[in-house]
Image 1 (cartoon, rainbow, N blue to C red):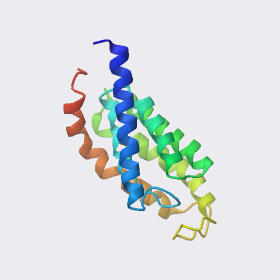
Image 2: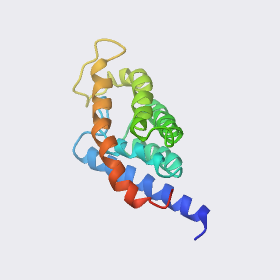
Image 3: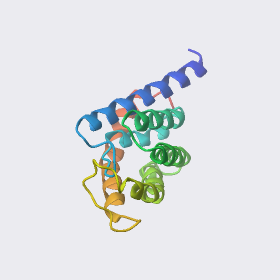
Length: 164
């Protein structure tokens, strides 16, 4: 099979998985506004297995943020945080696979607190921000990533086992 086609298909499947998992969380009321618990963030471990995950995660995040009604700042900077995290994960793939979940967590920890206060006046938020850098928002986003990031490698190693 043509490697370019395989790369494109892997990226598209990963983007679609990201969107589906985010829409599932959105149906449960978890994927938008100030507090976001995204099951799809567990997919940020995928660049360890395939570089096609980098554009797939980025595109999936843009589509998900748009479909769930996020603010423009969240669409832009949340997607950039995912892109930076995915690229960092890709860079760590050969060094230490156990450290691979850290770049998305670090990227979200740095970027999300600057976007979260913009949701302060949103009618559907249930958390009132008292200062510009809310440690609760950072904690929720980080905690939503950690369990899935360490569980997904087993499943995706099987799915993307063509890489040596």
